[in-house]
Image 1 (cartoon, rainbow, N blue to C red):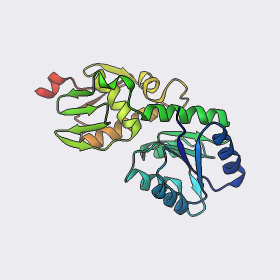
Image 2: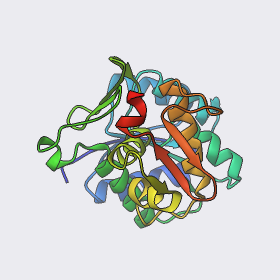
Image 3: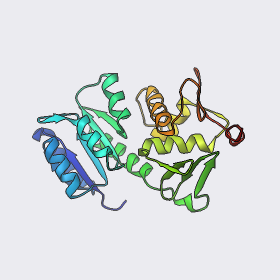
Length: 235
């Protein structure tokens, strides 16, 4: 892997300093910031390949920083927090975080999760063979990571893009929640499958889908989700 630029936004020196050192030893180019304001300034001045973002910062909430990043960028963001509540994780993921690591964590675990996120954010080498997935009025370009609905661009996070990709590849068929976790979050993911539901809800909103009478994304209770087939969307 090429040397990737990482922005670490963490106010605790006892965590930030050894973590930055460990990441540099792993071949990453690390820039650090100790506040929400400083983190956003660093992000805008030198956009990184991935952001490690602490939830609790001295001058604000890390989720507000995430909102600001997502307003202009799809760069992968991994949230760091000492809190383990389910709702906190779900909110961070709903706002567009790509992964969520609870303190304390090992550097090896974090690096593995970072590499997985970075890997999933890159276009697949084989994308040139089948560059576009198209089901009805939804089109996905696998090379440019551009998604359109009825010709209008749909802005998706990396995870939302990957989730939609899997569902489009299996259009008309039910994909189980655990299969989606394995495809999108990889087999090392140990979080709740509720994460899938959160991302499906976000996809529905962005596709203009009505959850009570969906055109695109159908929930199969107790099993998983199904994207409408081309024939269904043509009706």
